[in-house]
Image (tube, rainbow, N blue to C red; front, side):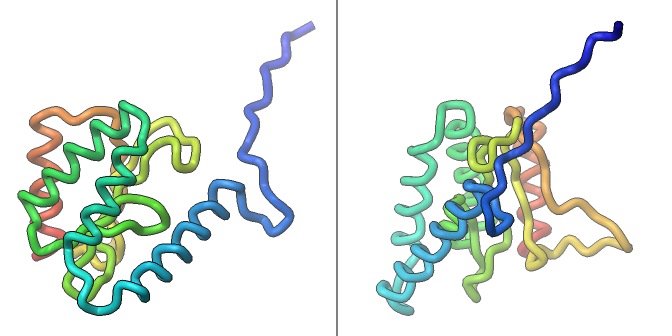
Length: 156
């Protein structure tokens, strides 16, 4: 008789159809919106940056190293972007406060790799199809150069 392969377990869905991780991200987003409202329109990059650095510091080592390096690359390559948190993730917004890119650590939704994602506010339109997210397991100098070029294009 053939041996049965173990069935891969999916994330447990709650009654409302969202995973616990998705509901936690939505709660974090609600807290971010409340904090933004309390800070008011005069809140600057420093407030957002301290929030992003706190999120990065709370990540486990492999993702924290990636996030720290990515933060430095964003600051150097796209200084017009402002750091902020978005659904509990480090993100970077344009002057209108709209998120252009974000870093999702692997632990966030229990995936096997971290992700650098871009929103529809990034200037990537190229034909009928283009990538909007990149899996990250480590950053080589060549990867860093590619990310810097992507960021420059995203804000162009």
